[in-house]
Length: 379
Figure 1 (tube, rainbow, N blue to C red):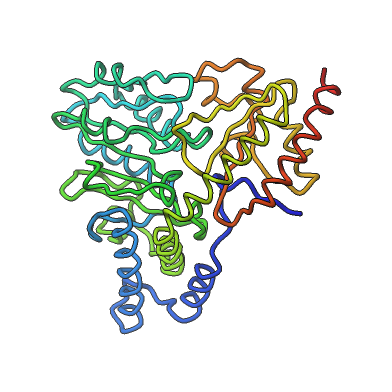
Figure 2 (cartoon, one colour):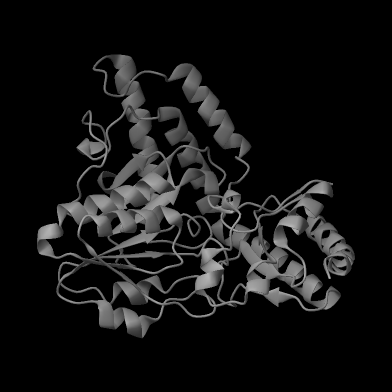
């Protein structure tokens, strides 16, 4: 049996999304900036995809921009907004368990003279709201907080954070892990910028989206043509945009059903592991997204366990795929002040609607058998 439980890294594309991509690549390949009929046809296709994706997060199509993925969306939102509004203030705020695609732009901006403030987090990675309140002042121009933590699945109180904005401060939300699992309405939630990624919702790699509230000042970080209203230059990827929109259409229409199924699989695995294995530590909070379960098995190094599971056809991760090859402790779990033996034995199981109860049972059976053996070997 082959069990893929690394869906927070990337997901298997929907067959419909693959078919749309192939169809567009074959028949709708013109440049949407071209003035001829085929160019107009391509432009219409792009606009239709934009409308679908904008609707899925409750914004207007003219507020939605295509990018190459979540990383570019985060960089464009953070750097582009900060640079465009630096005359209004230089304090920007985030928290230390953000994805590297947020933390690195903040480090860059710090080197450019911005005052970067980090809100401390608790043992489950939730930001200290009182500390955030104290950090916001008249010089604050940007708050950037993820919707869902990509390693332990903690769901952030975005509405509460949004309510703290004052003056010129805007809120950017990295919703890469939350989109398609939680309901999002940027207007109702008072979000000013929001980043999305296609390959987390069964769409293709290499395409993402950024919502930017109308009349918000933001500078481009890539210069060239006038595509995407001159905010993001480069010939638009019509095929990937169409595929992304199709994946979103399927995912959002089945959001509640899929979330319920993933939550059931998550709770089933959690119960099996806690009942069948001694000394299991659950690093995901009760209020965590349906798709992520972070578990530590003290006494077993996570990299060793990962390869043992792989030999049994089970694919998981030790944390963010973007950092996994660096072979160092998870900075996310470190910031949560977890002990080294818990961090060093942490494994992330991440689910999708493609997973089945049979796969979860098989995974639990393998872990229940292998963990005691590995603990004896590593003792």
